[in-house]
Length: 429
Image (tube, rainbow, N blue to C red; front, side, top):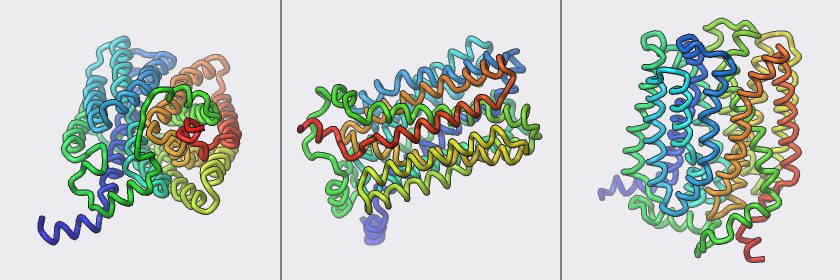
């Protein structure tokens, strides 16, 4: 290796490259998930779908995504995240493209079910990778950067898809978005390694820092009895309920929000491209600030204050803003309040996933998969509940009040979560 190359290697930690791969993965997942919400009116018109039928199309992905979260994370504990993530991205890319080849309502639901099977486990694998590559004191910030990439992609996707529709039809948009994943898979397989010690570019100093500060026991006796310890952990149920509320709200943003803004608040197509993406665009700041805040407070006051005060406070803000959006009369004010509620809820993502690493240790992937599976229950319910509530009551304010109530519940859950009680400690006890 040349002196210049050696100097570059010493200046740029390889773990930052791992984070860059994770961020690009997050951006791809949101691109492929969110484009369907913008294309939904065109798909409904071509297939003659009702609003309720389209809600089942939205939820088909979420259903199988939730079902296969834990098995995929468990599989990664056996064979490593390098292999599993490569399979995940290649699979979902195939079925993102296949969405554009759907020819009926049944085929569309089937493709989205298979899409969910393939994408399941992507984010728990990121938590698993971070538990091995990222020192404990950097995890909040790195999780915040990860989610910021996802939400930046989500915020820009409505604008990008609207622009693509100027020269592509909706089927071709799915084909273009899905094809990007194959390039990512090749690069990941070539560059990434499951353990820092196995990566040729990791310097001895960086390796020593990671191993010293990542907080994992040097000897890992894996999985026997792990589910019993997870299920009995006092934080398991509140962690899952909290994340159910978060994902319920997120799926409102990426499914029915464009329809709400157009039909109820009267936004034009041009305004829709901006305001439908505003919640996720604003969430980028929430992600980064949440990650920075939780790490800073953790260093000063310890894990429980550093994680839980951030989660509880942010959800109170989200609840108030979402309730406000339901009552204000100004369309733009309502849209901005929804964006503020979304950003506040996303402020909690870095501490949420960092807590899974804090508690789970070597089993961070499985614990985060369990949390995320609970979230997908909310994701499955969100578009369907909204469709039925609006059909029965003809009132779009009710779903917003319901979401505000869920955010309030999530705030209370954070009061009893214990990131300072890791599974390894409870196993030793």
